[in-house]
Length: 247
Image 1 (spheres, rainbow, N blue to C red):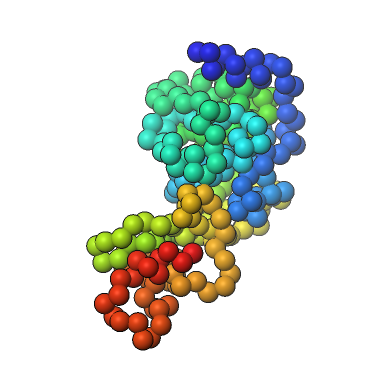
Image 2: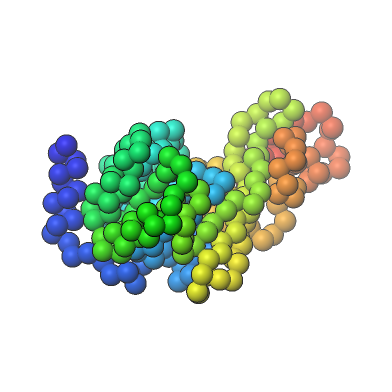
């Protein structure tokens, strides 16, 4: 309770942000968003990946905002911290059940960004009412799944982990291809290839130069792709995990 009270005291002392105010994101994600940031008072639909949800919220929290995660009992807190999301500024409502709309309404005026997984399909009328609440509170809503009237939709088209050999090794990172599309200035589809996460647990772009990890992002195999980039004279029995460390 003291933590929640502090959040609401802070909210009451700070005038609500306007709908046009922007919420910063990690530099790796900025090219996917109109204006390079999230727009307060709007909802963003994120499908296919909880890691992308966490990465999107991390920039605003790093800039001083609070965040809340609603209906995400399996949220990886270690992964959230790796993306730079300060856990001291994160409120958790793991299982609100059918009362999740009330929880969103209560927190929209107190935090800068809400991560939400609804318990089922969302009616357009309910989505419209909650979007009005978000506008009044200056809060950005990141929804794990579809959301009627979402201003922006992000999805992970493909992904592939690196670091494992033939039954041995350690996961070092994952490359993904992300697509973003929406309405208005976001109507043009934007795509980006990112490490999500990289070897340090955060998000960063995939370099344009050829990588010794070299394989298409089709996710079709768990075998190590690094062998094709090794010198021809290297013994065939050498483990491929060594190549995975070069990122």
